Length: 260
Image (cartoon, rainbow, N blue to C red; front, side, top):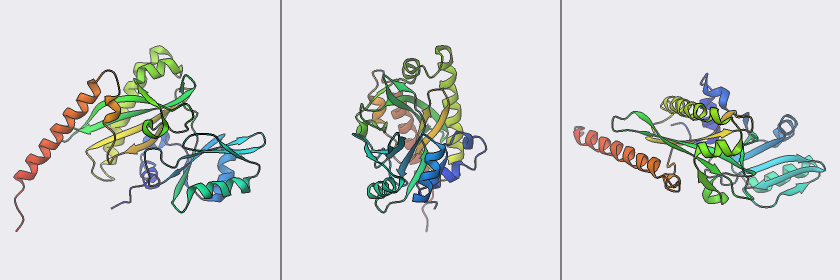
């Protein structure tokens, strides 16, 4: 079995001719890469390869006097030299493997960045089906959009797009359709990685309206996020599709002949 990590997933999706173009520049982190990434990009993120929910994510960027780092949320720590920055990253990273990734200038709602979660589930026929989407808005002092860890909130994608100004109002519907179309492609390709019955895809949209894949959550993507929306339609759809799929799986298991 392929190990489930951000790095292995990045390499897997990088082989897809279409999805590849939606992946931000990413490498397995090593201190020697820090300088070259910061030369190319204004901001970079350093993420634990095997954790989720925004845990342990560091945002690093250049300042007038050196460099700054924030881990998850709170006040930034500043240092003067690249050597000091590498030490600071190492102190925060510990022994776990990390990836380093180009920072995306996320579109913002009231000066707070947001990303988009698209929820895909297998239905009663075992086929992938779009179930809903929402926008996750970061907390006031957070560099992550995970609602539980970052102190943020959820809203509808249309509302976030209109408030952010990332796209023109008349383009919002086409962006939403594109998110659904691309998410189907992600799930179809994911079938070659391992089996999953529910996937939550986190999409970035930058201040110019460009989409990028942030993360593919396939173990236990949160249903509860959708319960936080005032309109519970998506939440009910998710629960219905999940119930249909589990019922199908139970039927198939019952039909399967017992092994001798």
